[in-house]
Amino acid sequence: MSHKSLPIDWNELEFALTWHSDEGGHYLDVTSGQIVAFTGLDDELAEGEIDAGLEEGRLIPIEPCRPRSSTAGCPSSQPRSPMPRCGAC
Image (tube, rainbow, N blue to C red):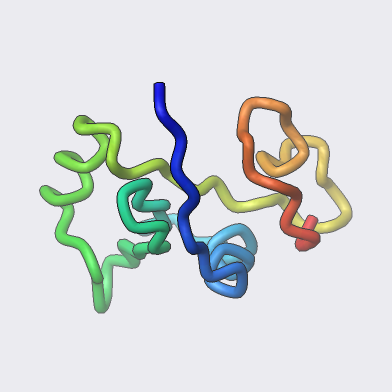
C-alpha cells in the first residue's frame, strides 16, 4: 500500500469535526484532501455521489466530536484514525 501526502484545510476539518446536524455530514476526499459537505441544503455533493465515493473508498465520513463536556466518543481521540487530534475536542 502506498501513502501520499494530502494538503488538508485544517480549518475546514475543525469545522467538520465540530458541526452537529441530523441531516448531512462531512467527508474527507482521500484523492484530493478536500473536505466536502452534504448538508441537505446547498450541497457540494449529491447523495448518489456520496454513496459512490464511499463504495470506492474515495470518501471517508468525518464523525463530529461530542461537546467538550463529553469527549469520550470523540473520533479524534480514538486510535482508529491516523489523523492528529483537532483540538476541538
